[in-house]
Structure formats: structure tokens, C-alpha cells
Length: 208
Image (cartoon, rainbow, N blue to C red; front, side, top):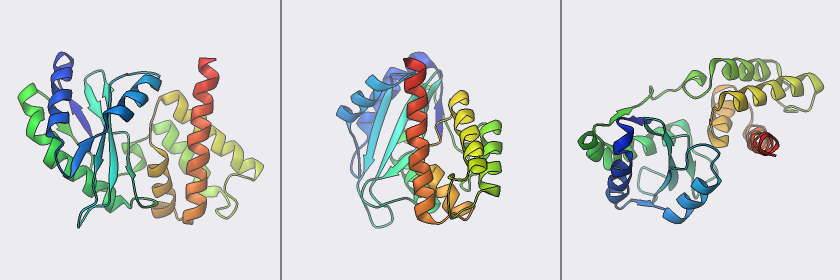
């Protein structure tokens, strides 16, 4: 999801979104400030939290500033191990309905969403998506990226993601590997954890 409009109005939109986050939504301003301080690009970050409800797990949703508004890089579970695609989309739809939609239009912003059933191309660049498919399509799903050939293809994917600036999120990557491409849950989450560490290491190397 993205929120796009006049950049000069983004500070006003930010305050309106924060004010609109009423139960079951709330804003974690302290954590938002920490993430913004450590961000390599935009320093405008707002972390929302949704309490668990009858049809929704407790979840965290991040709005990340862009040159024309905000986008949602990921939604993460707060109490369970992972979100299914259905849960992810339900939390996002609830955020739009309760928080974003009531305030965006008054500042000249529009909400853009992808189809409920997302493909890799919705959250990865074409090059990164192709390299992930190449890795996942031929990798031994019982050993992850440990075989030298699989490891090279995995590294190709990591470098492509970093160079493109994509921010798919470890949880989203794990869900795709498990729910779409057939990896067992443990292997999918191990790879997602490796992904998160590798991207952070590449960023650290570039900065130092």
C-alpha cells in the first residue's frame, strides 16, 4: 500500500494519521523515533500497532516516508509467529478503513493498493524477483542455501534486493517461500532471518 500526494502536506497528513489511530489502533512514537534515527534514507517513519481482535491478530504496521507520501514496507505479528497472507491483507484493509481512508483525501492524498493476492512483482524489482525464483526453483528445500550452487543464487538475490532498494521484509519473504513456493516453515523462516541479517550487513559495509 502507498499513500501519495503533495509532499508539502505530508507533515499535516502525518499528524492526522497519528490522531486517527484510536482503539484498536495506536502509534508507538518512541519506536518510530528510533527507527527514523537509524534510517538510511527517509527519516519519516510512523509505527502503528493494532490490538488483537476477533478477526485480527495483534500486528505492527509501518509507514515509511517517500518523496511523494508514504508506503507500507511490511506488517508484522506481535503475538504469534507469523501472519498468513489472509491475515496480512485483513490487517492492512482494517488500517485503511479505520485510519488512512478517513483523513488522506482532505490533504490531497490518495491510497494505492495492490491486488489482495500479491505476486513477487508487487514487492520486488523485476531483477530481484527473477533471482529469487531462480534460487527457489532449483534449491534443495531441505538444505536451504547451504549447497555452493544454491548459495551463489541466494547471494545473487540478496545483492539484487540491496541494489534495487527493495524492502520486502523478512516476514513477507518467509510467507512467500512457505505458502507460495512450498518451503517448510522452519526453512522459510531460517532463510528470511538470513536475508534480514545479510541486507543489514550490506548496508553496514556500504556505510563504512
